[in-house]
Image (cartoon, rainbow, N blue to C red; front, side, top):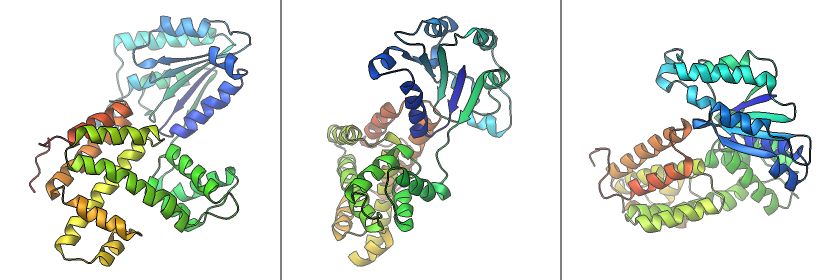
Length: 345
């Protein structure tokens, strides 16, 4: 049996894998009966060796192959043009050999192809596999922006809590469609109110917004002062404390845009109260920190940083680079005295 899970909803992918893994037995046995393979350079010989292995003290095993089908994806530009990718002779042979092997896949093995992005219908390998019996394809996409509040409310209900509509919208604005980070924040919020009442916008502002801004301030401070070592230290502290790379990119983008607004408002002579209103900040000390931090950046450097953030996000989403490495390179580049993108101040 082959399952193809593709899409950018990392939380749903992980939960589905955990559910399948739980059917393999207790934790000790399930660990011995599950194998993860890097599909980017995987050969059929390696795949067959993993799939044909007998289960250990059980009757099932699971083989997860990451990134195999992404090898056969077109570039985003070619997809927009509606082009179909012609497989090379080597790729054609590999796909054909895989299709020939799958009917002989042991009944004791559940084979899973896991792709971190949605596969396009032009993917030749996907089309070939979908024509076989016993192949199940499921796309797991992160909720769209307009449906995020409903997703948050439903997820909170699963945790035995409630959240007001305004609080769900605010949380969606702060975190975005990173379902893993949203789930972590909902855990904190439901524990904060002890599931005795609905989470309010004030709870979100206090527990999520203010805390995140304080955390990200330290990182952006180091970037503004070009202190690469300190910036990398703050970055990895945030990652170690559970922040996902895509969430950090979103928070960095939000912070840099607020700094751009702060510089403009300061130039217009806006008062602290006016800046709080325009920036949507509920705490006066955050306006003071934004004003101080904005002095470390020129308008041009902020625009360059936002451009680099967009490039990094796209590289992660298209699978060109692993998330942690992408963030390391991004922060290192932001700390360089000279930016790569020529934008006048």
